[in-house]
Length: 302
Picture 1: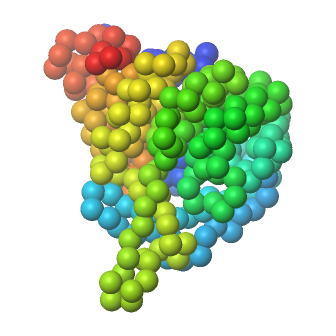
Picture 2: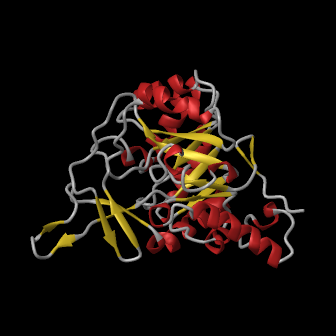
């Protein structure tokens, strides 16, 4: 009998597969296409203290080996999120991770504190790494002092386990990771998108309305693997690896690089069942190689 359960920030996931924030709505949107109850966890879109309109259009563009997005964390705000989604979360089996965003540290704290008052939420993911908001967002994740401060302040207002989502758009991701760990993060999720752009050569203008956007998909997988490998060597908390995961084999690579769990993102747009395909791919790899406990491969390449 195979054991696929993993432990992250004190909580047991029945298997190591979740979704990347912003690619799966709140889970309900995909429930008609696949059995979301098979996942280890659901990670929601970003939630802010008040409604955010997002960036001007166009906000999505294809690129070789992936896509660009400049959504700008559009969301209806924490109160609407609670009204619309909490009842759904209480009825599903996977753990629920809510992605929290803000322009200021106080906003992160407000959302975290409000969400902590509701049953049905298991973990919080602090989005300190989004490149598509004009203030806040990635600024917190590129300065270790700001990362440390936002994690420390949010840690004061919630008892829920904290996952901190890291950006690759830094000189030294190890410094940022250690700052988050030292301030009270229970786990890290990495990586968020790379900063990029496209130009429409016929219009002689940037393709995206916001000029720049986040690059995701298979093209960024080598960068993501390198980041996970680096951080796994310098921190002691679990890592949720993401960045171009399309198959079970991709997921196994991330786990061997040091990730305890994985998140599927861009693949969901091309294949609504991508998460199930990845999970089944992990199971097939274990069967083929006589692996009975998924934990035995975590960090195998370190």
